[in-house]
Length: 130
Image 1 (tube, helix red, strand yellow):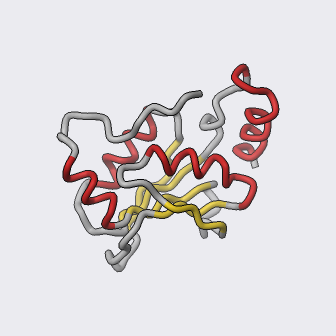
Image 2 (cartoon, one colour):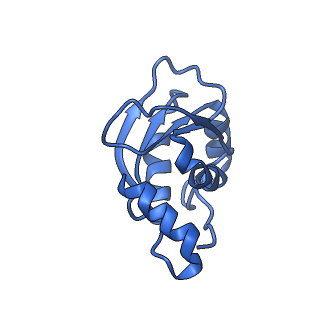
Image 3 (spheres, one colour):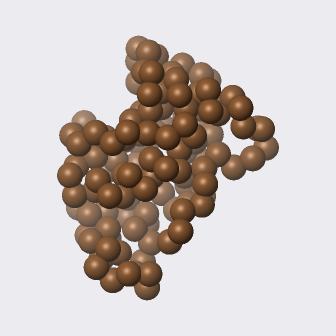
């Protein structure tokens, strides 16, 4: 996919390559039931250049920990994204189950707890060195 090609170029070329986030199509899914958290996290990662193609619910709302689903070739990028998320995340290699996304973030209870401790007027993700 376009995201995989951009990521390979970024890794191979170093700092002068285009942002690896430019071609990534992401999905942020609320798996904890806290209203607004998926939308807020989406806004935060968009500021870092990730294109969020979908915001969804992952019912039932019983996910204890946040995780990111991606194909093997996007694992390094997913690990970088995991560091940007409130409460952190683990990476799971698998299918995103939707053709319009390269990576799916499912927000668990740990992200809701971290989100509740952050003042509402602050950016929810950390800047990652590009």
